[in-house]
Length: 331
Image 1 (tube, helix red, strand yellow):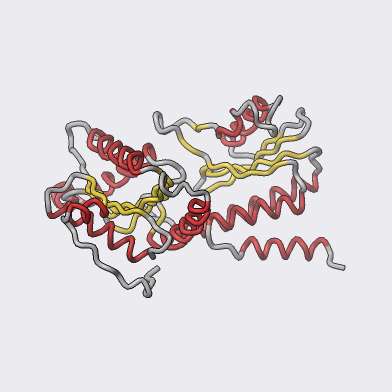
Image 2 (cartoon, rainbow, N blue to C red):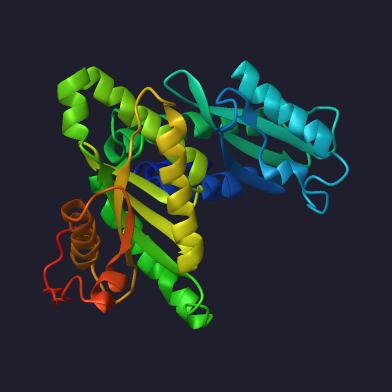
């Protein structure tokens, strides 16, 4: 017979084996389910309002009137959640039945996530377990984020691209099975800042870094949580845009370009060139990157400051499609 300590240690081993954010999060939720048996458990990302960039946005979960987990106590649950974020401390609603517990997940002295648990009864033992598991998750979250994110911008880095694309390819199978692939697709976009070297040479690299950070602010205000955003290096960025029609995708990209151009007013107008290709399950990472890159460099050679889709350039005869060696995977 295995002891409770052995079972807990095994769960912690599995938790600390994870090196990707998605699998780390799933492992924590599974471990909480196993040892605390909650009515519900979720991890919420903390978002800042894009309008003020200061106000915390309450997760939609707490605002749904037909949500069975918050019905009748959503206002008190939301208050508990917001108090957890503002005080950066554990909060629980002892006056509610079931009890709702909110535990902050910290990174660089800021709350970046909240572990939210709903229980029939809250015991000291369960509270201690939740605190300990949240702390283990917090420590490994810092390691995973350091490994997968760009230090300057906080976006995902090139190392994280391969795993995200593999997850997209897995999801493509379910999309194809649902027979909606004709309507919506994933899209891969590569873009960079037009004449960024001139900005660095004219104003200095510190100013160039500020331009990059401002660009990321605009990106986050336009693209959704489901759109994976990467910085590959320098002023080169990559997007994995969540399933959308071609029209929706182009409208979103154009909105990004327009907002970026207006962001600094008359002080400086920053423009980007965006090369895009449709993600297909039979194309590996290197093929997709080459196609989007070819579209990008066609723009660079013919005027900059616009958006082009690789397939459109091929159909117009502007580019000649070449078959790439998909036997070699560079990610």
